[in-house]
Image (cartoon, rainbow, N blue to C red; front, top):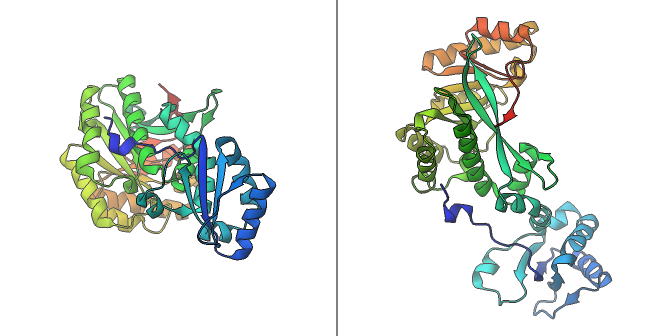
Length: 347
């Protein structure tokens, strides 16, 4: 399953660091200079007087960036270019081509706990049951979690937000798929399916990167037909052709595809037409209190009808009451998910 190119995490903060900054204005430069001087950080001479070359240790990094973040506006950190280097080596051309915004650097340094969590393999998956209308278990959705050194659980939202800010989504998504499959293999539920959340933007070359998923599934005694990948409607998909290519690769390998959170936004029906999923998951906001809301009932009835016409199976998410379960079951939902039927649990 391991793909070195996909899972490599470059060291960001070193024992001794060189921070090159190109502020948008002289006023911003003066603020940065004042903070560095006040903290007694070493300043190296630079050819361009508009820039700064600051030398600082690992211990200096977080306090310095914390003060900078408080002193500068978001516009200033967005427009200040930053390059952080290991002070023990000469910079390469590739270093200068990979400059980021100061805002990104601040977020990345603050998010080093995620790098540590990935490197020390402190991610895991909890499984929530997805049931048939008669209550029998059809499958499980894998829900990503992290674990701090003290045992505290970190939510998927926290992990994903930091990954998005620090461009670790690619690495996190791969690790999440691996943990989901491992948890499901431990569960050993004969005939059950595994639903795995899927971020299209984290896949560059499906033929190269996703074949490792196929191999890992086989190694654990599973088959691709056991796995259903969920594409969330809220994921920003800029290249529909690329996404269709990814899903075609999945299907050719025997996996199935679900479209998640239908009804949560405006692009759901378009995504349904574009992707032709095998499963359609109705957003829990539409299911909550549906037994008492005629507007929600009308929307869900139409979604059930559209899915039926296209051959997709409907999964109603977020069921918490008997009344909600009764209504969606009568409306024709194929599968049900929610706290009423089972909460996420670690394997």
